[in-house]
Image 1 (tube, rainbow, N blue to C red):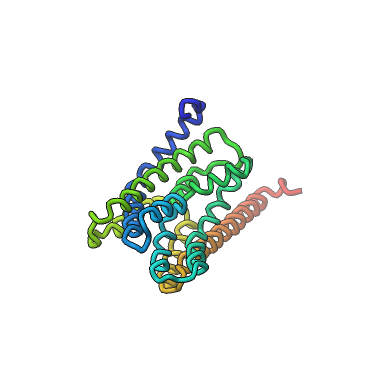
Image 2: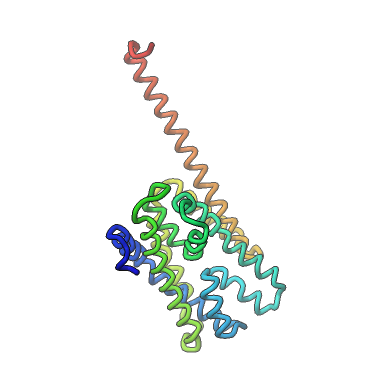
Length: 256
């Protein structure tokens, strides 16, 4: 299948693999932590394997495990998972203009493979919307790398959970590995504002039920980033207006 790709798509796919490669250690660590947690919960090994393949969302998988153990109603478990995964709706909305030309079935597959780091690195490329040769192949290069590293580590954690002591601190290692990726993405004032506001909101609302702190942090980040962008546009428009006024005052003949 790889050989049947055009040269442009082949290069773009490899570029996607290389782009996401620095995130593999963080992804592997989180997948391992999630697999171990599922194996040591009330889930059986087949159930844990099925969740890893079907859900493919570590945060929601970890969030619902205590609810399974407490034997809470199914609606509570589904609501918690939906709240934690609400950010994927935003990610999908961000990708929609880039892949709107694809049929629905293909877009649904893209949505399954989308993720936090994939969306972050895809957005950093500043692709123009609509069809562009190699853009979808670049996405698939990142998606294949992320999905395979996650599933390998998650399944390894499920099958080898008894070999990993609880005091190894793998969850902290995964968090620390993600920090450089987040910091590297802060390239604009709006991004800095979004990260800062999201961090504060997440800490303030940490004890809310159903992991509501996560969607609240995401929404707050969007509002903060949008506000900073709007302020920057207004300031830019005012600067252009002042420059135009200054130029016209120096050269009154240009004004008719």
